Length: 380
Ligand SMILES: Nc1ncnc2c1ncn2[C@@H]1O[C@H](COP(=O)(O)OP(=O)(O)OP(=O)(O)O)[C@@H](O)[C@H]1O
Image (tube, rainbow, N blue to C red; front, side):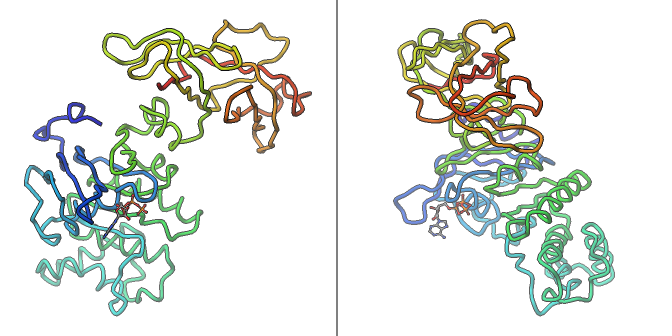
């Protein structure tokens, strides 16, 4: 992401701004590279990316547990670089809960209030409210060891919320829970965020989790934000092949650009991709492309359709002829694997059960897939 695409840090709806932030642990290798990022007041922003891409380091710099090697981080306009963690008014939830084992649930939740010198009566009230938020009022007298993992994480969340911070940071908080509980907690967290109106910054490497909960997602790779966008935009209009591959399923086809160039604004324009087997397909050229370049097209499986042989073929350029490589039954659809001559990767398409064209297909048969060129994104 370029600095020019980031709104000005002074704009009223920005709570946190990173400007030119760099981080190295060993003095040589940058794990966060020149990061510009604005976090808006009240949003649920997720930092998503593979292991080692720098998400946690960014969160730790925001929390104050790590210091940037260069650049600035501001919270509500105030420079944070040298403000210690306990003076930042930020709540934090970690994957390993980090509850104090010798304290009861109520004492754990009340701890941030105690260190802030909140009087006992008010403390009791706020502890009760925070436990009610996470549906754990009746567990106040228990110790962490007497709670399940999901219950402990709820207490950790109550402890992060109890002092009503303007910003809550969460680092893989659901990572240790089983799938069912994790999905349940995702919905609860999202509801809590909507109810409280606080700003949540959430770190995960799980794209489903990111898509389920977030208003916007920043996709990290090797210390760089590859794209920052609302979830639907990230899925429908990935800026590059990394994002297309990291978020959801996508099919890839390699070839050479024959015609078509970006429009004046450098955005998208229709182009023709010549595939090595002689087929020519139409797609949207993304970014700077020029005729003759090697390029890779990406398309979501649900944006391709198995054509019935009896059906009138759509316009040239919006079909692909290949061979069935396999069929996998998925209950509500069949996943049809297809291969195309001289393409390194197979493609797949989700075919609804009962589709007539599916009836007689066996591996090795010729198949035709149809698509709209606007859904085929071509990256040089
Ligand atoms: N305290 C540290 N000392 C030295 N190197 C570190 C330290 N913390 C992280 N790193 C390195 O910095 C890079 C980024 O790590 P970071 O934890 O920020 O990534 P991440 O995207 O959060 O990964 P994960 O999802 O695995 O936690 C990695 O190469 C990691 O090995």
